[in-house]
Length: 292
Image (cartoon, rainbow, N blue to C red; front, side):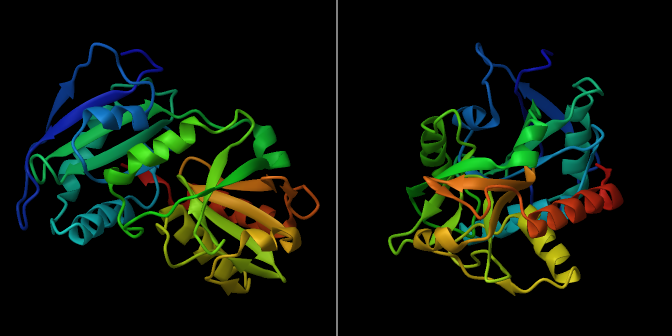
């Protein structure tokens, strides 16, 4: 397998309440032209519930149980309640990981078909392309766009094509686009959650957003650190008084933001709260990463 290619697999077996699968069989999906990214790979798969995460030390990850629960919650919100067979999916993930060199970290995506064959499982993988260290040292630039998820608490592929189209149009110097609603409130990124530090408090939207698993870990660490938290979004018009900002996702971890549109955030450098939470998140990964 080429080290820079995306691979797609179907997991043989149907998720059913109470069913226990003793063996897991993978069927590789072969395409004439392999897709260049997980998002591009989604065009070859049925619609459904999905979750995406990364590996550490090649075969470890964190919060895998949370990803399994997310699949079940999304399927339920879409009107297809299903129970995820944890061991079957772990076996499938381990088999796919071993198809790549041990030197690579991976991005992995699990998808449950909710359209063509309800309960069918697909797995896709790609090498993780980590951001350069300067992005974490200096922060990144974001832009805003007017878009809201129709069913924000469900991670469904129905919005993926729209989001992928928005992402394809991002300027080369922009890391992410922030979704803004009709009232000017910043909701989340296309594939991330947004945090701001304002008036000495940590702000992040709770309603109208997909609550990312990395976001939950960061909030837990913020509470442990004694930070004051406000689970509300900030408006674009308030960015001038925002002291710090960062985004979170499984592949980005805690990524500082130095600019949104034309507005420089705070001093233009990662602030103390961002650095604190980035360090605590990194420590949490070391403590909790476990073999898949």
